[in-house]
Length: 283
Image (cartoon, rainbow, N blue to C red; front, side):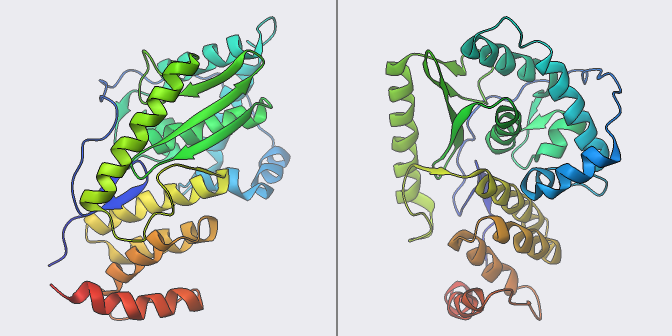
C-alpha cells in the first residue's frame, strides 16, 4: 500500500518532517483600495504566462487586480529609501498584511484570499514583487525549503519568508550559517526519506518558472493525498511545463496506479511511467 505523501517546501517524501516556520494565528485581511486595473493591463500581464500562472484560481483576474493594486501601494512608499531600506520595509509590510497562517499546501492565490502561506508560496509572492521593483534576486531551493537571496548596494540579503521576526538577514556570517543549516537538514532528509535520484543537488538556484511549477506540484500532492488522482494529474501536467523534472513523473507514476488510463504528455514521461509503475507496485 502506498504511504501518504508529505509536502515540505515543494518536495515529496515518504517520511514526515516538521515544516520550517511556526504557524501564526489568522488576522484580518488588509483592506486594499479598489484601484481599477484595465483589461489591457490584464491582457498584457497574461502574456507573461509565468506570472499569471501563479494566480491559479477559477477566476484569477480579480486576484491579479488585488496584487497589482498592492504592488502599486508599495511602490508609492519607495521614494526616499535606499534599496536595502525599501527591501526591509517590503519584507515586513507583506508579512503584516498577508502572511497570517502557515499551511503546507498554500499557493499564491491562497495568500491573497485566506492569508495562508508556506515557504514556496511566500517566496513566489516576494519574487513577483521584487522583479517589478528591479531587484536582482536568486531563488534557492533545497529538498526541504525555498528562500530568496537579494542583491542590494549594501550587500546580499537573505529573506527567510517563514520567520517574520528574524527573516530579514543582512549579516554575511548569519547568511552563511543559515545556508549551511539548510544543506545539513536537506542531506539528512535525503538519507532518510527521498527517492534515489530525485534531487540533482542539495542546494541549487532555480528560475521563477521552476518555482511556478513547484506550486502546481504542491497542489498535485494535496490532491493525491485527498484521493483526487485526476486532479493531481491535471496539476502535474501544468506544472511539468514549468519544471520538467523527475519528481513530477514520479508522482505521475503513483497516480497511474489508481487510474485506468493516464495520458502521456511526453515520450520520456511515458517510458518513465512504464518503468516506475512496476517498481512502485512492489510492496
